[in-house]
Image 1 (spheres, rainbow over the protein chains, first blue to last red):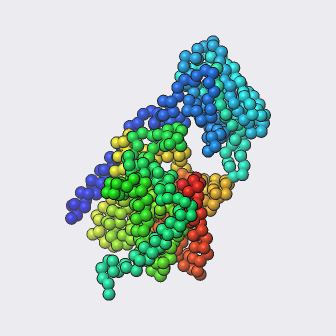
Image 2 (image 1 turned 90 degrees about the horizontal axis):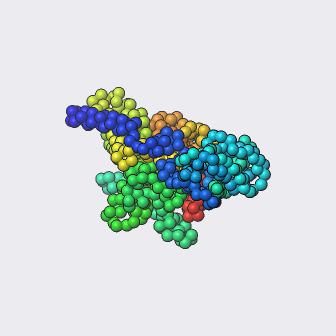
Image 3 (image 1 turned 60 degrees about the vertical axis):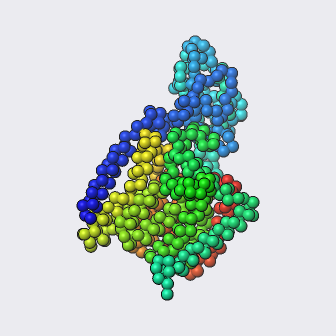
Length: 181
Length: 361
């Protein structure tokens, strides 16, 4: 009996060594690794696939998958609020991003009280605007700032503050839509 | 005089069956008053399990009926013991995945009540089996025994595990293996096993190989699940990584506790519940039931590390916590006010379940 038990222990130890090695060496795509394992990418592999180029003249709603949202929170009622002192969108631009061609974003926003906002496209400041009431914010820019492929539109929200009543989220603005021209 | 296992357990079996029946009658009344059918019981995780029973594990993430707009959700987070049990019923009866899960859950619920009575009698012989059965069948969260969740199977297996731990360590290892296939916390039954086995290890050197084999068996099912996930997704730890779809990532459990105390009333309530649950391992350790204390501590802290959201069902379906509660309630007729509040609480949970209140998940 003893040799049998010891053989079983040895086999199980070998199996666990294999499983341990396997667990430490996943064979997955870079997109999977970045999203699920290291958490360095806020976009799921599916979102990367879905990020098709923005169409000019069309307004995209707050849950449109053509935009990828980071630092934004989608409530059960469909409203998308920022969650912190900064937030960003990722979007894709096709050949509309030619240098020298003027473009514009029209953002539909609802601030929570008076809010200062600083907007950056791919890291470069493109607008600083104080928002006091629901409305649109139009930001004109040179197409040279746009990259072919994925672009990042970020916003700093220094006046974001906790919602209160037990909600610890820092809210500043509600995002109602975006139009790209 | 009756002999044999059935004869010896006749009274306890009747108590377990009686309380299960009372629970089912109460559920039936709630269903009738709310004009709901039994299929309405299978929602939230049960709906995930039902799809798993019928279609197996997801080959890739998806949006789960539009609820995960990032298309990042997958059923890899669900351990296989419950869906496999329900799959057996599904194959034998031809019932739907949801119906098979509800049936499996109810069967495990009945068995869990009996198993808990046995464990309670083992650790606290003077404890009334009626009170032990009532604590399982009529606590505010006993709803989860009837809705196709893992809780009744987890309670059943953990009770059998602790029962076996005092009699046959190798058998406890086999049960621990099943427990580890039910929920991640089950893997940590190995800690309780080691604590319980120390005495035998010292006293009986001839038993050491068997003790070691029992310990080595505990993670076996979990290890096979990891290999399966690796084969399916390329990621053996997909069960954990896929939690990202629910914005759950392991963190400091006490950080979540402090956050909970500062947030909404429901978060405060959960945080206080967690604090009270953490008293159970302290009490059990004081009573020198170190294996129960370790299991209760890990069984609370581990799920708490991902947030307080689902803590009630993790707390109220833990054998050591329920045992500590039953012992407490046996003093000075505390069971009277407890059940006076608990039964309406249970009915309220059913109403919230049917109303789609997210806090019941």
